[in-house]
Length: 293
Length: 327
Image (tube, rainbow over all chains, first blue to last red):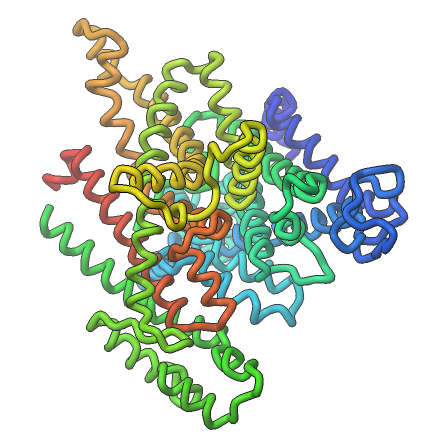
C-alpha cells in the first residue's frame, strides 16, 4: 500500500500493541519453525536409544519422548507443518469464499439462489465430523490433501459476508457507470469490486489461519490428520496426552507453541481489523460475521 | 409469525434431508466396514463377510443411492439400523444422547449467561482494568484449542488432587462406578463429575459471547434512545438494563446457532478426554471401526442440533425484536 490510506493504516498498526506483539510472536515462531531445525543436530525422526523420556538438558534442549526422539526437533517440525497447513488452508478458503460470494452477489438471480443454498447446506453438514470421516481416506495424497479438505469446510460464513458487500457495492455509482459503459463483469469485479473488499479479505484470511490450525491439530490429535513418521503439533500433543504431569516437557512445549501460534494470528487479525476499519464493532473475533441458517 | 415459523421449519427439513444424503454419500464412500470383518483371525471367507455386510445394509454390490433409500426409509420410522457388531444403533443412541445433552445444555447456558454478563460489564467499564482483563482473557481462551484446554484442566485437577492428597476434582467418567447411596448422593456425584468437562466446554463460549456482547453493548451505549432514557431521569445502570440490554442481545442471536456447532465440536474432544461415553466419543470410535450406520447417527444428530439451534435463535430474535413478530 503506497497511498495515504496505506500510510495511515501502517501508522495505526505500528502503534497498536496487539499488532506489534502478534507480529513479533509470529516472526519468532516462523524463525523457530524454519531455521530452528538447523540449529540442533537432531532430526525430527532421529532416535536416541540412550535417552528415553529424558528431561531437557544440554544434549536434548527440550528433552526426549518415549522412544528417544528429540522434542526440540519434533516441535520445530510440527510447528512447521501446522503453520503451513493452516496458512494455506486459510488462503484457499478465503479465496473460495471471495469467488463464491462475489459471483452470488454480482450476478444475482439463479446463480445467487443456487450458491446460497450450497452455503446453507454446507453450514448444516457437520464440518468437523465429515473431516474426521474423510481425512483417513486422503492419507495417500499427503498433507496437501488436508489443506484442501479444511479449506472446503471453512469458507461459508465469509462467502455470505462477501456476498452482502458485493450487493451493496453493485449499487454504487462507479460500478453502475462502468457497467453501463459496457465493461464486462470480470473486469468490473477485478477492478471495482475486489479492491474494495481487499482489506476485509486480508483480515478474514488472517483470522481464518487460527481456525484452520485448530482444525488441523484437532484432526491430528485424534490420529486422523498428519501421519507418522511426520509430526504436527496435534500428534505431539496426542502422544503426550496421557502423561502431561509425568513428562511435562512432552506436553507443555508443543501445547505452548500451538497456543502461541493461534494467539499470534488472533492478535494480528484483530489489529488489522482495527487499523483497516477504525469503526468499532464491525466484525468480531473468530471471523464469524453475522449470519444464520 | 406462524407463517414465518412454518417456512423456516420446511426449510430446515429440506436442509436436514439434503445434508443427511450428503453425509451418507461421504461416509459410505470414505469408511471401510469390510476391514472390520476381514481383520479377524481366522479370516472369514469372502462370502461370509459379504453376507454380514448385507445384513446391516452396507454391501458394496447395491448402489449407494439405493442403500441410502433403505436406510432413510427405516430411519424415518425410527430405526437407525445396526452397528457392525449387530446391536441396534437406536439403543446405543438412547444411551449416549443424554450424556452429550447434559454437557451441551449446561455448557450453553453457563457459557451464554456468563458471556453476556461479562460482555456488558466490560462495555460499561470500557478501557478500564476489567475491560482490559476480559479482552486478554478472551484472546487467550480463544487461542487455546478445545483439546489443549481439556488436557490442561485435567492436568490442573491432577495437580490439585496430588497437593490435597485426595480426589478433590473428578476428571474421568460421568459418575463413580459402583457408588452406593440414594438419589441425593448420585446427583451430587454426577454434578462433581460434570464440573470440569462443563468448564472445558463453556470457557470458549464465555470468551466468544463476551466479545460479541461487548461490541453490541458499546453500540447501544452510544445510541440516542439510551440517552433519552437517561434524560428522563433513569440512572445509567437502570437505563442500560431496561432499554439497552434487550437491543444489544438481538445481534447475539445470529451467533447462537454457529456458536452451538463450535460447542458441539468442542464437546467431541471433551468427551474423549474425560472418558464420557457420549455422542462425540461414539463418533470417533465408529469412524475408527468404519461403522457407517453409527457414524451416520451422530452426523444426523449434529445436523439436527445445528438446525434446532437456528430455530431457537429465530425464536429468541422474535421474542426480543417485535418488528420480526409483526412483519
